[in-house]
Length: 151
Image (cartoon, rainbow, N blue to C red):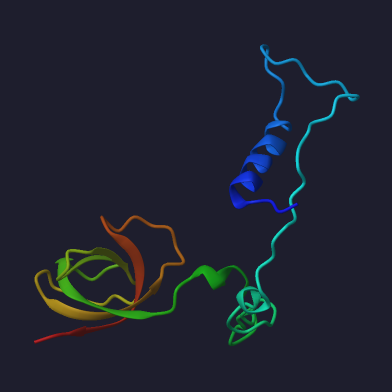
């Protein structure tokens, strides 16, 4: 017996409809009842259609990143030093200063070196993460490691 595609689709719908939960209008079939369905022969794609293109190796993984040195303990969270260029907004001989960059970022600078910075001067400041918790004004608190006036 040859099953046409339309008949195969009808048979599929009838088979899957029997799997649904019974509703109030439809009583559940008893185990002794059977459905008159025509079994269909499954169709498989040809070998050329089922072969995946591309590499067939397993998933690729990236190697774990390694550190350049031994761990430093809790100081690993501290950023390395960096240079900041801006204008001094709060000057004096320290220990607190204020600096604003051209982009508008404010820094609260801290140094116990007694460096004299004049308000309104453009400077280039080498900073590192502050180890002390002190209020030196608005902005990100950093320690000064070096300061150079710009012309």
